[in-house]
Structures are given as C-alpha cells and as structure tokens.
Length: 450
Image 1 (tube, rainbow, N blue to C red):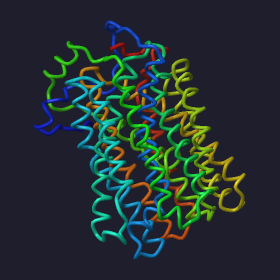
Image 2 (tube, rainbow, N blue to C red):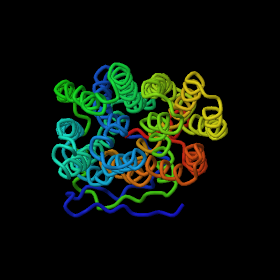
Image 3 (cartoon, rainbow, N blue to C red):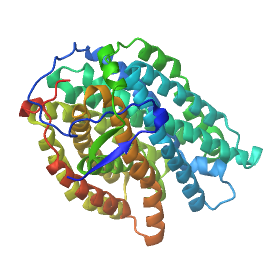
Image 4 (tube, one colour):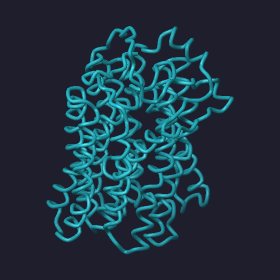
C-alpha cells in the first residue's frame, strides 16, 4: 500500500520515530513487561468514561444548547449552528494529540492522562457556567466555541496515552479484553449521559430544560472530576526510562498505511453515528420522538454496547482480530439500511429500541478489535503519540463532520435514510481495509510483545 508521512511540528519536542511498517509480523519476541491487575486498569477506563460523559452531553443537548446560544435562528438553523459548534472542537484534536500524545511518550502515560483529564474538567465547568446569548450577546457563542476547542484539545490527547497504557498493562493474551475497556467505558458514558438526559427531560419542562436543565447535566460531570484525578494519580507507570530514551531519540515521522487511515475513518464515522452521540439528535429531529424517548434510545445504546465491548475483546483474543471485525462489519453493512427503513416506517419506540440495540452491538463488535490491531502494531516508544495523531486525524476529518454532514444532507434531500447510506459507504471502505490489514493477535502467531 502507498504510504504517507505524518510529520510532527518542531515544537512538539521531537516525538515520533521512523517506525517499522505499520503492521508488522515480528520474528523475535521482546521481554514482556509485568502486567497490571484489571482492577487498577479499570481506573483508566473510569476516567475515560468521565471525560466522554462530558463531551457527549454537549451532543445530546445540541437542540437545547442551540436555543440558548443561537436564539434568533429558526430551530433547524439553530440546530445546525449548535452541531457546527460541536464540530469545532474537533479542530483542536490533532493539536491535542501532538502535544499530549507525544508528552505521554516522552514523560509518561500517567502524566499525560492526568493533564487531559484536568483540561476537560476545566472546559466543562466553564461551558456549564457560560451565560446565554440573551444575557451577554455575542460573547456567549464565542465562549462556547472557546470551551469546545479546549475540550477537543483534551480529548485529542486522551486516546493515545490511555490506549497505549491498556495495551502495555495487559497480559499478552488479553490485550483485546483490556483495550475493550476503552470502548466499554465510553459506552458507559453514553449510558450515564442518556440516563441523566432521560431523567431531566421527563422531570423538567421544555422551558426549564432550555434554560438550565442542560447546564445541570454538565455540572454533574464536573462533580466527579476530583474522583477521576485521584484514580489516575494512583496508577502505576508503564512507560519506563529506557522507553523514554528511545522516544527521545526518535525521528520526526511515522510511515502510515492508507489502509490504516481507512480503518480509522470507518471507526470514527460509525462511532459518532451509532455509538456515541447522534442517535439522540436523530430520534428527535428525524423520527420526531419526544425528548424523553430519544434519551431512552441512548440508554439502550449504552446498555447493549457495554455488553458487546468485552465480548468483542475476548473473541478477538481467542479467534483473532480480523475474523471478529470483518464478520461484525459485514453483518452491519447488510442490515443498516433495512434497519433505518424499519425505524421510519414502523412508528414506535419499541421498534426503534430493538433496531438501535442491534446496530450498537454490531458496531461495538468491530471497533474494539480494530483499535487493538492498530495499537499493538505500533512500537512502544512512540505508541502514545502515533496513535493519538492517527486517531485525531480520522476523528477530526470524519467524526467531527459526521453529524453536520448528515443533518445537512437530510435537509437537502428530505430523506431520513441519509444516515444509513452514509454509514454504508464508510463500511464498504472499512471492510476493504479490514481484509487488507495484517492479523496481529497472538493466537494467530503474529502478536507483538513490546
């Protein structure tokens, strides 16, 4: 496959190395580091869940935030502006990935995870306390965008260090299970945000939800920031002195296969369509469900995805990464369009909930082994920074634009099936990448033990 270079800026402290081929088949095993009990590793996931809860709450309350910060627009346009503000956060992902991700290679995984968590907490608190447009005028949306940029910076540097930590903390035959904690806790965040949204939307009037209900959801997230910081400070470090010396001696680029970027693109689009946030907006805006029922759909997504994540990790450890992700991706491609047709033609919350549960489980089954494949193929000295850049590049290009693009295409075409066709295109590209990518699971004799 053709290769492209991702070059780090000079002020990023010389952080990425000229790695071997992105997906390699090692013939010599290195020393396996001492593993860390899953109880301690779960602290990484819990901190990750707290950050994603805050980040996703913005998307779940996109309509209410639009009313608060863009009151002069019609509802449809206000929603578009709100979704655009959501997408603005993704502009800072690549910068956050370079700064925090490479910081995790040069200084350590734990300091990088603490830094990203602190920034996220500060941004969420600021957003929750920002006055409305009616109170301070144009300063309100300006502050909104500023805090969204800070959130994006923090999350851009979150995925690399945490996923690298999970791979390095795992027994060699349990890397799939450990890395599944990354997605499982993200889906726990979906569940938590959905429960909060459901309770608020059913207990508060529409006026109260617009005025202060969405702010309460954010403040609930900030309340657990001290707990998350405490948990992360107690974690051991997996990046040792010899690894940091190797990272310091690294060159400025990593050769990246286009097949890996295609895999990342498919993961990003599917995650931000099914797994994380758009489903609540779609249920309200396209299916015309009540706010309470829309958040109920989000709870369903969280429950079934949380169950599928560890199953996917375990299966990928036992059967290999490729069989699990190709099988789930192929099934999802076959059922996604009929599923959206059913939701639009058979009106009823029960149909929507069943369909969304199936789609969420299938999405979880292929994203976990895909992330494991990419992570364990990267050499340890540059794993945090390289993974962060790859992830941020895909998320910023595709994940951040997914909601806005789908909403715009839906308005232009008048078709409520736009999300199904959009994800189908991404799945076709992703499945090609899955077939071409090399197997990395130890069960297949290709595991990487660094």
